[in-house]
Length: 216
Image 1 (tube, rainbow, N blue to C red):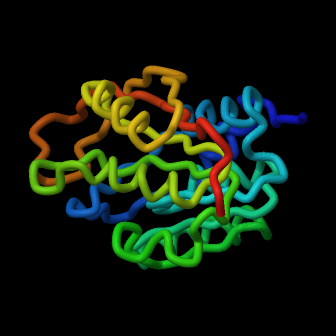
Image 2 (cartoon, rainbow, N blue to C red):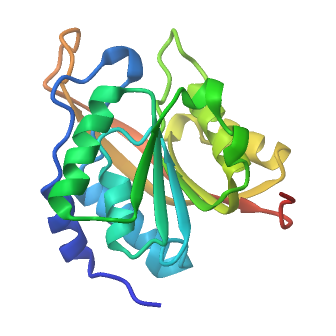
């Protein structure tokens, strides 16, 4: 089971373009290269859930995680996102990196999936919106849809403060779960309403897998 060196992967991710004008209602934040590289490297080096696998990303944005998965020799990567502007940047990143095994689907993840994509992927990766006071619980909706699409495992990021709730719901949905790392997201002041230059948010990187083999 081969795996690109972590430092090399991070260097590739540093060259990826991100949001030009992030949209507040979509909670668009960039997964920083040093975090994205460590997430992907762990998924492949510890579990072998990327190389030669069918990999999906929900809310893929500009594509840093999925481009990284492709660089780790995923069989095929498909990104789902509602924002055409983000997907345009994604397409440019894919072209610049000369990657061939990536496709994207513009759709509303909550309304349009799983549909024909149910149980079509080995692995689902996502950094979902955490949910504002007007959009509470959206991360769990993303997680449930990711579980519907995957046959092996789902890797997702959730606020550490919600850990007990996330793990309880996962068990109710027939999933095993393990917190692989506690991360600290340093979110820059991307929006005009942000009063601080940056905000640190404690985030769990969690692997979810099935207690039994799911039926297609």
